[in-house]
Length: 274
Image 1 (cartoon, rainbow, N blue to C red):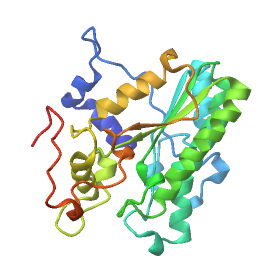
Image 2: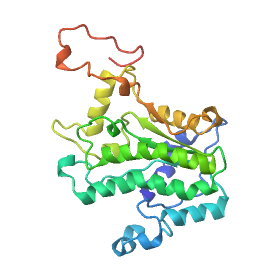
Image 3: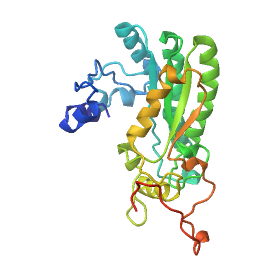
Image 4: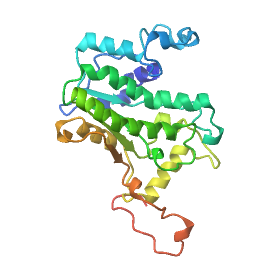
């Protein structure tokens, strides 16, 4: 992932996304390798330590990265937890192994707890922590397996508890964004099922057919919400799951269901594709 990220930054196509209002490009001062499965060096198994993917990357456990950031910058104002991994995500929950289930929880949920517990002491009052969730935390989403739905439920529950504990102890806010389906690299990796469509392609089709707003969801929609949650505009908001999904979370039935055949089809949102 580190090499993919560094490679993406070098692409000309990335420059547009990095462009600031004054025309200059956003610069990343430093990139810290991080494996959120491990809190300290002693947690890293020998097979991981000796894996060629980790050769030359330096210190990468959560605790080590926190110490590096502290030495380099002294504080962190905004902490964004944008990571998840479920090694058995393509398996139904009934077929998920204990190891796969716990791995999904460790990487996708406990990593937030670990990062907040270690970064919070160097965050000033008013600091903001954000993470990314998904509607599978509270609704059944076939195809989103391997314990990932459970991990997202844990993430949202931990968000509320961390908001209480870190708010009282450090004066910082903790929120999570439940984003609608976006065709990201990670989402596309879940794979295709019968008919050739990937999980995320089906999720996008379902959303545009059934959400109150039938407009396409873009990463910018999620990004601007994250920006708002990170500023004083949302100084009174913490412990919240913020939905950025064109309203899909509010629906209790699918209007493209055969049960609605014969009824007048609701109009599409102005400006959306037919």
